[in-house]
Length: 254
Image (tube, rainbow, N blue to C red):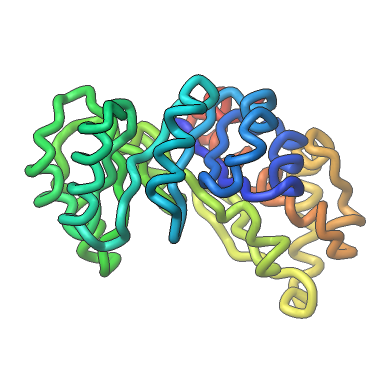
C-alpha cells in the first residue's frame, strides 16, 4: 500500500524530501504554479481539487499538466453524491477520462451508480458519521481504493491500494503526535502540553535515534521544540516504524 503524504507549501515539501518520502498528495492550488518541483522530487504524485476549489480552473490545469502527475481525482462536492456524479459526467464529456471517481455521502449507493470494473481505482470521500463510514467500507465490493484523508486506516493496508494523510504535521502544528510501539500507538505531547512527558519522550527518541539520524534531526532539537525537527519527527517515531511493521516501507520511503 502506498501512503501519500500531503504537502501544501515549501516547508512541508522540503521536509518530505528530507525524510525520503516517495509519494505526495497536493491540492491543485498548491501544485498550480509549482508542479515541477513536486514532479522532480517524488516518485508518485497525486493531485486533488481541494476544498473550495475552482472547477473550471482545475480541469484546465489537469489537461495542461497531464504528464506531470500520476493520479488526479475528479472535481467532487463534499457530502453530495448527486453533485459529484454530475461533475464526473461533465469531465468524461470533456474527454477527461483519467480522473479517479470520488464516492461521497453514501459509498454503497454511489458505487452502484458508477458500476466500476474490478480493476478500477475509486476514492473514498466523506460520509457523516464514523460508525456509518466504517460499516460501509466493510461492505464495499473488491476494487482498488484510495482513502482520501483516511490516515487512520493505514493498519488496514490490505483493504486500500493507497491512502493519504496530513497527520504527519501534527507535532509541529498541534504539538502532538502518535508514536509506534508494539504494533499500536501512544500519544505524545510537546511544549507546555508535554511538560510531564519529557522522560517518556527521551526514551522514544533514543529508541528511534537511527530514524532521526536518517532524516536529519537531533534529540536536543526535539526537546527544544524546534519547529523543523517537530515537523519531521512523526516520520522517525511513527510512519517509518509502522511501515516497516506492515512490510510497506519500500513502497513509501527511499
